[in-house]
Image (cartoon, rainbow, N blue to C red; front, side, top):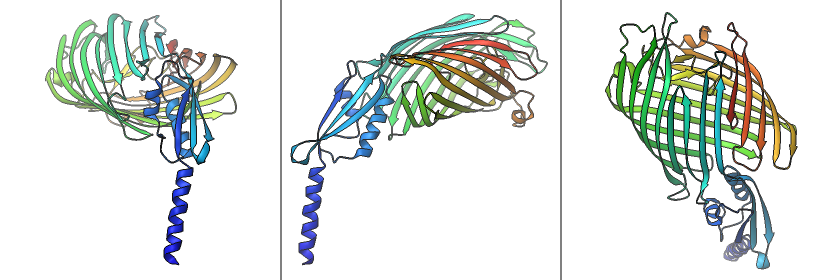
Length: 422
């Protein structure tokens, strides 16, 4: 009797599993993105047991792709208890121009133009480059294929030649400007461990030069500095974000680091053995057209007394309205919070308004952690902005923000750019 019961259970389990088998997977709506590529990324495979949780995970996985604006699924029962899953995707146009422009109270202008294809070969590979002008000319080229080798493994390379006017800030509050010239080649390996966790690890080979331009330079700081550097670079991302056109919800953490493996040159002034940064982001949908967005950015570098510190206070990076590189430090805490409200939406177009508060504080080079809480180096800005959004083009958000100081300094400025600020 006991053996008969076991056999019955096994037969029932086998019949039930067979009745829940996915025999057909179809993908609709994709024009440029290859069907084979999307099926390779999907968790659910033909011949697997039907799992609605994994089907929902596939929808979210597709939405995270640059080439996909939205994704949905339909489950149909076929003959003999087999099932068919149809994924429907709304595709983004993924060849994207970029523009960032900023202007401060001194009418200093800096801009960056770029062109990237985020869906090269229909496999969401990234190919593109940029040109920027910030007193001097800079350019760079990028190629990334996060899923080139397998569903989990990929590679990427980039070359950047950044030439900038870099101010440094001294204890007597005098400003000194240098011409910064960095030529860097980087190779990275990408690994997607699971649905939420992604890793990058690579090598960066760079030649960095500083040439004195103007200002009251102290005699103990050389006119010319140079460094050849080999660095280990990496990134870890935890992503639990859900995107639906212009709306974002969920939590994400991105940790990046740069560890100098070897350096030759003016290491006393330019070498930071470790530079790390972590962005914590939280997004919440509010009602039908509202979105609350938050970012906490923490940065830390090996603390030296050199004025060539790695973290900059800047319009495009952290505090809207503050100006173009107005301070530097070896540690930073920055909080950005904003409320986005859809004011108008029809078809492919949406208009958002936003109100924001940006706050940050910096540790002076060679200083103490108390610099972060004493308030001497703190900045607090608030402002309003507009977002002009093309819902069917990846990251096609043209933003205008006007920020003004809530602190002692009466600074203000307009910041333009492509894409949400964060």
